[in-house]
Length: 390
Image (cartoon, rainbow, N blue to C red; front, side, top):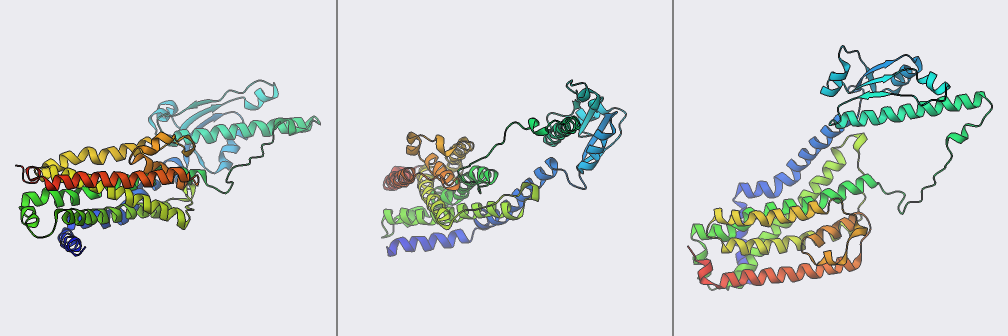
């Protein structure tokens, strides 16, 4: 144990001298990532949602004063004039060009009113605006028909033939918040922790080969198993810190970096957070062992970085694949796949749909995969032709 701690202290001292590693481990996840996501969220919110200083610019052509009044009273539209409204709508210079003529006359004749909408279908802001316009016209139609029915002593209740009483599993749950957290937290934990481990793993394996410091270390009285375990502890420690801080940074961006229209509520229990941390740590230990194995096999830092590229990409791909996967659609076979099972269980925890069989399988397989990767790395350390290959 003393030998392992000697290696741990040595490697910690070496790594803490490297500003690049400290930047990747501490500064980027807890400072840069929240600022980046805050900028992204605020930009998306500003583009899609209207505000007092950023209203939808609409060219409205109508011969019904009531329609114009509805647009003006809505408070989210700015009625403007244009000499070429169609092309300006297509080019995004205005949000939309709307032609709504003879609306009241059509309703009075029991014919379907026609509204022409010109807008840029590739613009999220225009799509959002058109959705509000369509809802507004629908409400106007219902209001007009209700007034007509009441004027003829008929009940306006026929306009709403159904009353929907929703009985959700968790009526207080914010589905949008859960969806966002379920998509991004696993990706941040899996993706960013992997990229954060790479510089440390390459330095402790191929880096020591290049500097010529690995051979003297192996010639000491410390066993190779102790050296390997010490390096794994250091790599996994920094990887766990990076993983947890990246998730915390994302939560900070959710909490403080979103405007009122995109506000996301975070409601994770202490137990849920601890389980997510446990799964993150198990994943980090596994991926650290794999990266140390690959780095030890590589001849140089350049070669190690080349080999580790797919090792960092595969976890990200697996987390992206499960982005829109619902916990209820998970098959038992998926729980045998490394990394994928961790992502799935984290999503289940966030959605409050944790399957304890899935949890135990994931923990069990994670431990097995760590042991297998450690055995592989130990075999690398015991082969002189691998350690000292040119």
